Image (cartoon, rainbow, N blue to C red; front, side, top):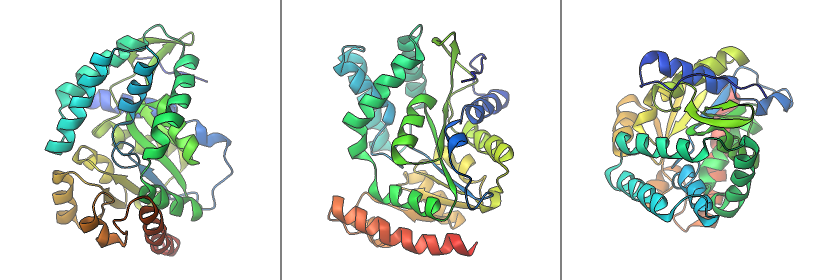
Length: 295
């Protein structure tokens, strides 16, 4: 597997483009899949709080803590950051940067294969049961329509690929860590795949795969992903934070909220929990599938 090398940046436009290009170049899962029936349309899904309840990197950290590979103190600190996000409805970028640097220091010098093996175990143990059934059903509508589906996330690309593979999706775009001789260096290629970098990654992948972005759909829960949502022809807010909900209303973007009965009623999903989410998600997906096939 080819690996890009580069220096992590400070969040400027050049660094965002580098991060996007690196992530698109690392999106290799889909290469082995069958040729899609619809080659120019695709869907892009954010992961944390969109496809999975909570932060995937937190659950990875929890699994690593359970194996004695990180401290409980580090896990509690990150858990508190996630609690603040849930209450405030927006991310603390200073805390995000702190968590990133800590994570990079923990994996520096470790073999990629070892981290991937841990990731596969931890997904099965802690993440699989936290997938939003409604969001998963929406992804399936795109697959059923012959479209490719990628995850687009700030989560490390290795973990993002595991999630995509377990869900039967095409592949994943994620944050790319620099690797030399099969070992993590403790640096990133560009910057985390976050905000504008996600949009750049989608554009780079679209160019490589011959996608028509006007026929593509993107899903996210966060206002930080407005650049990505604005890049495609159809944007959908999933479990949106306060800012994204307001933006979606202003722009006429569809909103689907699988968290509460009041909001779920808008998309025909009962509030009765697991079974209701599955049934409602499939019903919502059926309607969307018809729409996709008419494009």
